[in-house]
Picture 1 (spheres, helix red, strand yellow):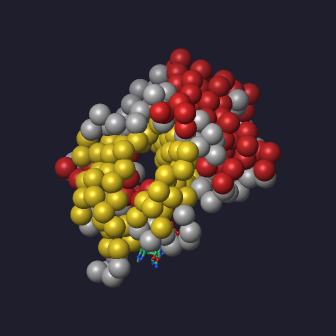
Picture 2 (cartoon, protein in one colour):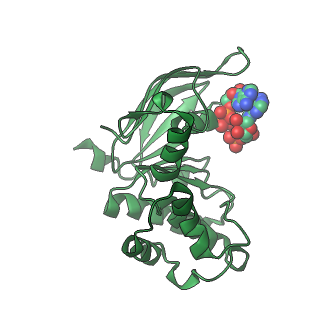
Picture 3 (spheres, rainbow, N blue to C red):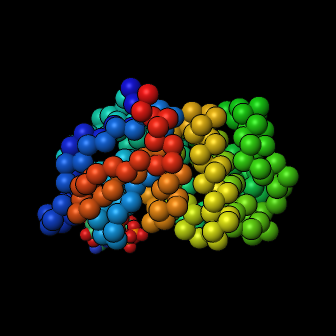
Length: 230
Ligand code: ADP
Ligand code: ADP
């Protein structure tokens, strides 16, 4: 099954207009999709519904073939903790914990034993191996976002959802973080879905879904769109 599948997902707040209007979307394993669109077009709603943080009014969301709506509350929480990763604009690292504790916290919450070799390999690849015993406040923005990316991958999730991951970073640091995300996709077959306002960020994805008025209007190829054409 695809890493992420949305079938005719509609979300209506307060019975008013559709924040999402019958959105269908398939994200293959190992692909990197950007979502762009004007403010209020439905990007956050799309990301939240896709990630199981919000419940569609109608339609279906499947993560790796599992229909989220068919899960009970406990199973849904488990899915969010172990099969989905999140990266936010504001990093959301816990300031009183070390980087290492931040990384392993989701595993502990999910009751998943830490795969030590995977974690060591991960922090090497993400470039934070030397920062494990620091606290987030001692790190630069780029380092914090690298730590947050490592945290999102600790449980080896099927999909990582990134909400404006470079929104708080300067241009050079943003480019490095995007290169890192792209490497994780290209080298590890990670699937990433990223909401962004930044065309340069979207260009690092395989493709961009352009959202307008609650619908996907069209797709733009990213820098590596030819990789997906096969
Ligand atoms: P962005 O445009 O960066 O996605 P928004 O300001 O649109 O941010 O939304 C931020 C949060 O507020 C989202 O979680 C969204 O669901 C919520 N939100 C947006 N519009 C409304 C609204 N009219 N009423 C209540 N919550 C809203
Ligand atoms: P974007 O992320 O593209 O800025 P959103 O998904 O946040 O767009 O919002 C899409 C539409 O849904 C907007 O009209 C927004 O005002 C509305 N909306 C979002 N969240 C809520 C909410 N919690 N309650 C009411 N309306 C909302």
